[in-house]
Length: 196
Image (cartoon, rainbow, N blue to C red; front, side, top):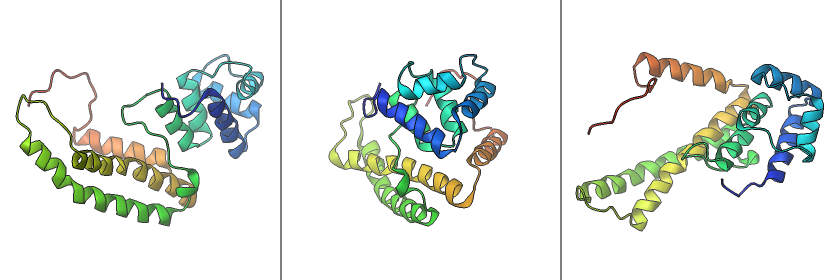
């Protein structure tokens, strides 16, 4: 578990997400119950979680809370804190991704930096001896960092598009999934060992 955010931080963020979504505790409890079918979810439970009188909910309920309140950064924090993905990272502060035009400028800069660093990764791969130990030098680490910077940049563009333009991120996700499924690029079933 990552420790950048402690339990009290998460509780405050849960409460802030609910308040920012302008939901009463009872309303959020009803929505979460309908989303998760978890019987423990009522107004008193929401209140107890926010106050620290009950343990934090399980991951399913935490993620539903973030989705229902449309707090994208909270969802990233949950993913990062509980190591739900090897590429989960703390989110960029909301004030940096509230304006769509600013996020596009940032994305353009990140893409240019990453594109300029691709040759460093190619050179390292081409110089690597098969079966030998790989040692990442400082240029390689910096180049990988440029690629990693694209992840929060993409998230920021999507979040800002949602907040600034009313763009439906879920719709984008569904369309992308459909397109990738048609082109047979999705891992839909367990697969055997990849042979290179």
